[in-house]
Amino acid sequence: MMPVATGLEPGGPATSRRRLLSQLGGGLGALGLLLVGADEGLCGGAARDTGERSLSPRTGHFAPRARAVIQLCQNGGPSQMDLFDHKPELSKRNGQPHPGEVEVFQLGNKNVLLGTPFAFSRHGQSGLEFSELIPHLGGVADELCLVRSMYTENNNHPFALNMLQTGKTFNGRPALGSWVGYALGTENQDLPGYIVLRDPAGYNTSGKMVWSSGWLPAVYQGTEFSSSGNPVLHLRPTGEVSAAGRQRALEFLARRNAEHRQEHPRESELEARIQNFELAARMQLTATQALDLSRETAATRALYGLDDPETAGYGLRCLMARRLVEAGCRFVQIFPPLKPSFQPWDNHSDLKNGLSSICRQTDRPSAALIADLKQRGLLDDVIVLWTGEFGRLPITEGADGRDHNRHAFSLLLAGGGFRAGHVHGATDEFGYRSVADRVGVPDLHATLLHQLGIDHTRLTYLHSGRPERLTDPDVTGAQVVYDLLA
View 1 (cartoon, rainbow, N blue to C red):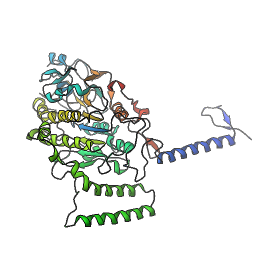
View 2 (view 1 turned 120 degrees about the horizontal axis):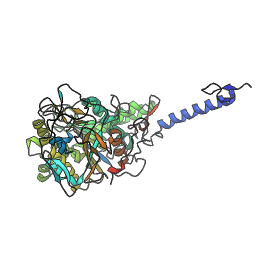
View 3 (view 1 turned 180 degrees about the vertical axis):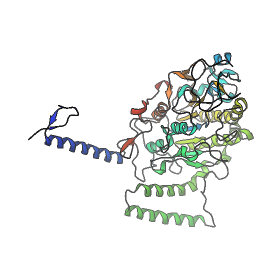
View 4 (view 1 turned 120 degrees about the vertical axis):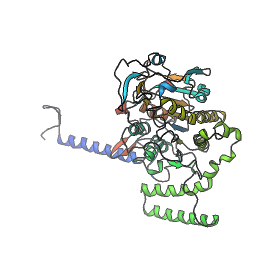
């Protein structure tokens, strides 16, 4: 039998046709095994993409340190050098030219350093240094892990938000909360695993796309709960129907669903739709109790600022988040107020008044959430993440604003095994660029998943023939930042 050359280079190694066919067959067999393994959840070691298991509670790859996450998403890009990253040299050289090159996003930037108009002071036994704008967060400094060396990939709000939530700058990928639900399910079968709390007046940047499940099954997307009126939208049926009548209807629907499932096995869309209907039915009985804030004491309501019109809206969402993780929800996402704008941390002008306004609305409730979780013994296994999508520049935009900055921003972590009273990383003397112990967004995702007991390199979902991951470590180099962990 004549040998067949298979090397890529002229004169490469040769093999027989029989061996070549054997090798090809083995490769196709391995590919088939990969596809079967992915369908069974073996690629990711997490959930099966089949119906009734999709929201059931599951264990991760190893023992978790945390069981739930509350994300305080600060849309707009909070200014690190005015809140968390004090730069005396920036104030000292206020009005002077920046000595290097600065990447800008909008027109109107001047290459002139802008010192912070706010005073900084140290807080707690840890001595963490915070701005005068956030005294309540300063009051829980000893519970906080402050990361000053974050960076991201894009200066535009929608792209940076995509990066923060999905690990890539483009649209259509699953959000972090969806990945957590896919991996772990939910501890409470009467509540969704991923719940979103936004300002009832409207949406922040990118709207519902920020909590999409992308190409993961729709059962893992974020479910909106309202902090105004009935918390669960469209929960109560209209018309005069007795409780007994509703129960008979639900039992009949369950029988028909079971029959249809038998006739059409392994249809994931059908399974997800049935499961969503069944979840909605269970929520009619339990969600109202989980979100009955009348059971909270006057002291707790005051802690969250519900007695103050300026903090009541955001405080209510923070209190709802505590009750939801208490009830077994895996991932709760809180979005900021729509004032002073739908991107309330986006201080392109009038930095002093705009930043002061959004801090007055969010500082007290954010700190209250952390303190309340702590006193109830929940902070040990619940992670609180306070972060925007990027930071701000140290130079002035117009007369008194700051432009977007992807090269440096700060964020806060509390609970769930993160180091308390700790500062990680550093920026340059003006706060423009992260220079020490840098942390990228994929590193943050890998670390959060690690605390939930998930190996980010093994959490996969087969999409278009490719095992997709949140972190995509082969491309991003994502790794767990162990220095952030207690």
